[in-house]
Image (cartoon, one colour):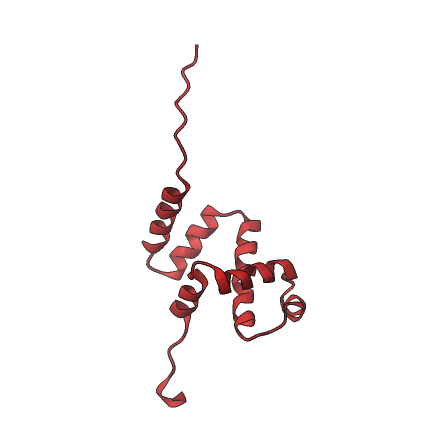
Length: 108
């Protein structure tokens, strides 16, 4: 009789923390891009990119319908992102801050 391995109990929090450490350990946008391409399907990458694409438009106060017309991202997805921006875990805000270009001395 074939011996089957004992299933490992899942720990979603620990699994997410492990994945987060993998992202945090990468040193460049190129490395993150390569990791994402290896990790995600094309459809998953498109969904993630769509969500990130609407963030600046939402921050500018662009209406959902107009965001849809500009980007092709569904109103439902845009609403989901808006809800996360307002009531999420702060991840979008952290990413916005991390990717913001500092003001040049000329613009001050």
